[in-house]
Image (cartoon, rainbow, N blue to C red):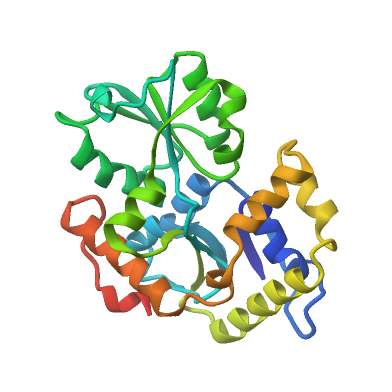
Length: 277
């Protein structure tokens, strides 16, 4: 069976046991490692893999062919995307008409940013540029763009680039809704006959990761794009939590709130919210 997820530490930590044959009775897995923008597009293309990690923001484009699995993904509190600038600029109004880089136009980060900007940036953003997330901070530092929306371990490393935090999208979202931030979703093709079994295997892989946190160290660091061991551990601690094991009512409410609001703003297609469960 084929699965796609990112090389980021939270994903390799979560799926280590599953893809290394450590879950009794689980299928063998062929892994594709890809940036979230790639998996978002692949899932929507009709040529996606059986199981994929995509952004929650990309769900409206794929729900007819894929179902949301209730585990394995990334939701949380205090883990939202950041808007970064340089030269100490922390005034959102200064982004009016400016160039901002984002990691994907079908990402939760992008949806949160556009909903935030609608409130905070009079006149609106100028140009939005899609860029691989690891290239955004250097581009802001070098003045090639005016601001960048960053995700993942960038929240720990942006000071190394001399950048300024303008806004934390997670803090804004949580204060506005009281809900966790839905970031990455695990989806499975609706044509599969065993989605519940796949979800069980993923839960067992999460449980194994928590029970044996050092077992995946080499695998995590192999794919972590030269990230230090300490930053990788911070990354895992932030993005792998109770919502990874089970979305629960708060998790589903967060997804429904984000996508329902985005649909009303025309940022995603209208869709049947009942398809999320």
